[in-house]
Length: 376
View 1: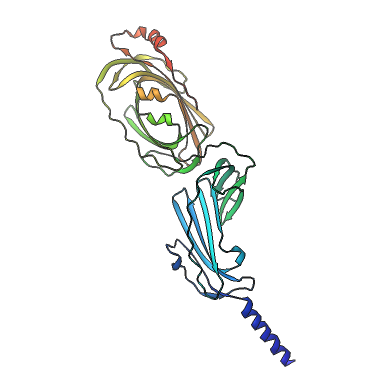
View 2 (view 1 turned 90 degrees about the horizontal axis):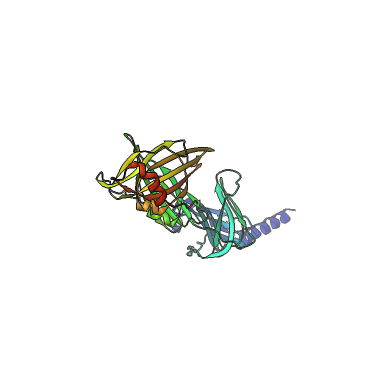
C-alpha cells in the first residue's frame, strides 16, 4: 500500500509538471508601456497551456482613452487575436499575444490603423451605464465590421445589431451641447437627414438692459455655415456667428461675434416683437444700421420637455442671415439629457429708404417679398 501511494504521488507530480505552466500575472490600468505591467508568478490550472498578454483600449468620445494591460494564464485558442467594436461615441479594441514556456514574456502587441471605409452594413447602436438599452441611433459599419455584437464591460453596455441589408445612412457624428459661456461639455450625436456638418454657433442677445450669450454645438447644414450678422427689432437685438467642419467629432473653432455699429445707413424696416404670439403688431419703422440692408420677419418655435414656446419678430437684418434661410436645430439643453428643438421660419424683403412714409410699407413688402423657407 505504501509503495502504491508513493507511485500515485509521483504520477500526479509528473502530470502537474507536464500539464501546467507558470506565468506572471498582472492587471493594470492607464499604463504607458507594456513592460510596466509586472506581478507575481502563478502556477496555472492545467486547462491553460500558454502565458498570454491582453491589451485593451477604450476610446470614448473619440478622444478620451483608457488603456488596460493584463497578463496571466491563457488558452492557446484565445491567443494572437484582435477584436474591435464600435458604437456611437465609443470604440473598443482588444489584442492578444502568447508564449508557451514558464515565465515567458509574450511579444508586445501593436494596434493596426483602423479601416474607416464604409462597407455598406448598417447597425443600430448605443451604449449606457444602465442594465438594459434601447438603441436609438444607426451607424455605418467600416472595414471588417460585419456582425452585430452585445458587449458587457463592468457597468458598460454596448449594443450593435446586425442589419441584413445595406442602407444609405448619415454616418456623421457631431459633438452636441449647450452653454451660456463659450465652451460646453458635449455628447456625440448621430446626425440626421441632410445634416452634413458639425456646427458651432455663438448667439448674443440684448433685451432692454439684459445681455445673454448662448453657445451651441450641434449637427447642421452647410448652408448655415455662412450665417453671421445681426437681426434687430425695436426691443431686441441678436448677434450671431457660426463655424463648421465636416468630419465626425470634429470641433469647429469658437465663433467670434462680428463688430457692431450704431451708424444709421439710411434704410428702415417695420418692427415689432412678441412672446407667445405667431404675429406681432408692427410699430414705427426701425432705422437700420451698419450693413443691415434687409427686412426680416421670423416665427421661432421652441420645443423642450413637451412644451412649445413661440416668438414673433420683425426688424432689420443682414444679407447673410436672409441667405441662410429658415432652419431647424436640435441640441442637448441644460441637463444634457433632453433635446431642445428650435425652428426658425424666416421671411425677408428689401428695406425701404427713410423718406418713404410708413403707410406705404405694407405695399412695399408685398411687392418686394421673398420667402426663404427651408424647413429641416
